[in-house]
Image 1 (spheres, helix red, strand yellow):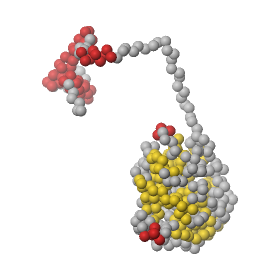
Image 2: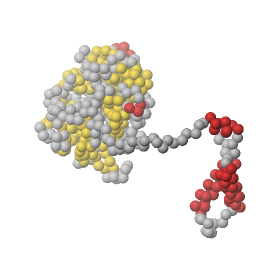
Image 3: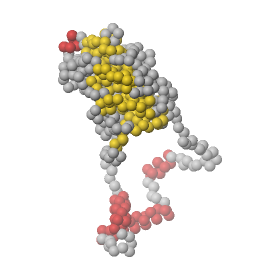
Image 4: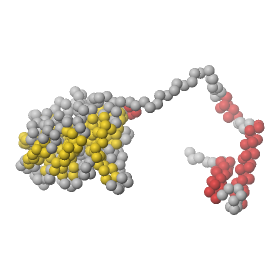
Length: 447
């Protein structure tokens, strides 16, 4: 149905337009002269005013239909004897639990298309009511890095600001958040403004095994990492790692970084976080023929790195040095015929039972390693066997698995919403959308 204005409405609109022009051009007594058309509008307006004045005295004309309609609606009068409404409480601030429930996750929203609106969203993916899913959020500017503590009641956001929005002097800042109140406990300004800016990574920042130190990767393009003493909340060192990037924790005082020649570097620290020594391994993959993902999964102190073609490399990270344990093939001969390959951004995770989850795509080839896939394969690293396949009909770009005996598989799908599955049997639970998501490229289990 199209709205058709009547003559009175048309004249009234003309009148409003004339008033606007009078305000723009002048007021009575100014040198602006009214046109003949303006005079017609004025006369028509006077007629409307006369009509309204007449109705005020005699009442508006009521048709039979109007009378019947008004008769159906009883007149409701205000009851002056009712008590006043209670005064609404203001200034109330809620808090979150010290340990987040198992179904809560931390959504790393990159806001890739603007990068200024990034955030970390605390989200309950088991909640069926939309209004109750979001538990809180904090901002994360210009592809900020995120990690969280399991025991300290904190999480960490390392982000970048420019003095004039998208330009001007740069400042990198580490914010230490209280996970109960989502308030900032401390801000540390980066000395060199060289923190690594990249798509969300699980190990762009990491905590030491005893959670007394925080490691944060730098790349400008010289590679290094900063060491933060979390007890004193101070940056205690910047340690260069030439040709090697990322911060994979080893024990309580060592860090591993992947190198551009296919090796891994171990950086050993003193108790105060300063450099003790560095060791490079022999290359364990060919960067041209058998490249690997930098996305590691830690299970029982063993770090697993998948290759683009489905070979899985493992390192023992329980001591003070990364020890290579060898590799095994995630693909059967039948899988290789179908050209199945690992693919995605945050393409892997683990559950509390020690199973490893990885996104796979069929017909994979050179250049498709970040595209995502149609299935999530579940492996038991102890037996080196695939134990389950979960279909992801809406595509899978990144995944996460919640904690507990009944884990949920969270899949960032092709529409950049979250598909939730029962991780044990692969059954679909629900799709979670419209929670502030634009590009939720990585999801973290919460603690």
